[in-house]
Image 1 (cartoon, rainbow, N blue to C red):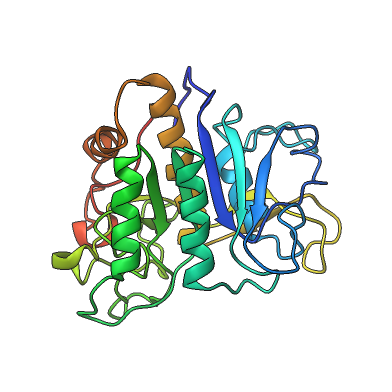
Image 2: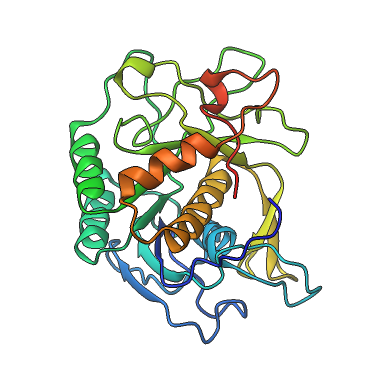
Length: 278
């Protein structure tokens, strides 16, 4: 990714996920606004870990244990919407309510590392199509994971919901060898918006993680998924928004796609316009 003069300063990134473990040392003392859309569960605890991992990819900074950098947009304003339960389950209505809240709050980047499988030739949800368009009109971009249903080299699965909406940016995953991740879904329903727009690293990504039964002795954990690729794109968009404050959400979306780099030997179906570039 190279060095960047930008850190996402002043840009609001909202992570719609399982919440955030606010006691994690890397988020300690940061001014973070959040809201839970799951009854009886708080946004500022994350026994699951998924949301804390995604938040770290987007806005984490330096690892306390070894001084290595793992996040990029460290000066972005982190916002948290808990739309998935501690067990990782959620409903369309909780996600829509949270998007609604985030648009009303004028958060410019909505990062959705969540995916619900769709069938071949299945049309996108009118609900997500509508709210995605409303986000763009309100100068917000919704970025969503393409989904992890594939087991390549078998025929991949189509881009999941809500990433399959025209008005939502769909993110596929690549690995460290610049190959498509075997789980990453593909643009098999492109005529209705079910294409991959862009790709980002999504295999063995180390980020912040709560100490839980999976991860007893560390504040970090490696995870793979289009879930990890999505906040890579979100944090990049924060840098673009900081750099070009006058550009609209639609113009920023175009910029991300125009600047993306195709990867030799990989198909548009799998990686869209290519790898995100700072």
